[in-house]
Length: 241
Length: 241
Image (cartoon, rainbow over all chains, first blue to last red):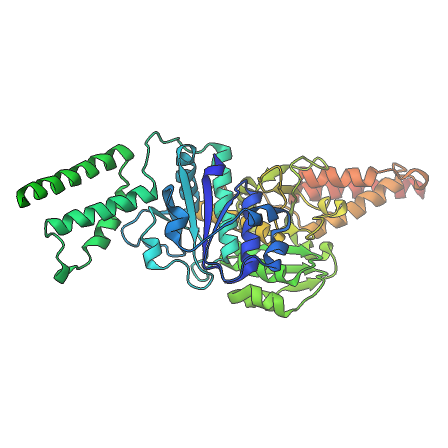
């Protein structure tokens, strides 16, 4: 079940942190590491800090976008030092977040996303997540080193899995890629119905992303929504003939 | 209350780990760092890894023995990757250990002791502890980097303090130094009564240390034990006259 959980690191600057992340993951039974445009990789420093977890570095997947790293995931967790809700997404602490992860990991791929050393995740990355997770910390100095944050999250995941302090979900959720296709479909239809007009795009697409990322339709619900979109398309096409 | 908890690092080899430890501590609201014979300190690498926690390095106390670092402590926690009990001391996982620490931190000094990068704590150091704590981890690769272990323990302490998931103890425990004086007294009296004889020292002193470190007499109980020892001394002296 832990094998369904991946760690995604975005634009890591210090290769030592990648190595430390690999070791921290393996210590807690995780093995899938995704690197989105790392500054330096592979690197000797990463190997050295990884110690007995070099296999995770050898098998790490280097990709060019967050999108690519999470395409097949049904649950994407964004980690952030912010302790206030942003984008109306649910905000959980590391312990509760880990319980959520473990409750879904038996039937789908899950991504734990960590941002840059200096500035964490950008807004457009946080928007692609379903849940935000923060690590409770000293309010006067709350920002952890990224490899330490990874260690803590992976530890909480390991503890939640060991203690079975969670209830397994029965819902099946769509993958991130399916959601992307749905958003494309939705936008296309809303342009067809002139709900979105080129002169006044506004932030409607962003707002719809936020709403659906938060509400997390199950797979059957998504199929239903896709069916509604198709019915609208067909009706409009028929009338246009 | 967190100000009564110190982290003690023994013979740290990589100065980067000292810096990372300082940051990890400050992130979790701890501030007292003791360094027992560090390999290199102060150091630029430690400063760099400490980031916003350089004040902890500036105030760190460098001492020449574990004894010195814990003399005024009533509770000494030894961290170890071993998950089997050694020396008959109680063995707790990080979460339970943190609850124990926080339950006593309101009325006495507490030490969290971490060993060398390569080999952890030596037996004679583990023997000076009241409790051993381990971090639950992947049995195939359980040994964490020392700064990561510090991060996890400090986090659990912070969580326990925040959640008040503990009951405050009312007992007053003697300091480590008082226990040391008691052991000296005890040994002196046992030589006087020929319970310990120079030709057959055996391991009786070690065994007594283990017993009393585990049973943790309260301060009033220790005073009583000291009274008993004194009464024996006086009786023997009187009879020898």
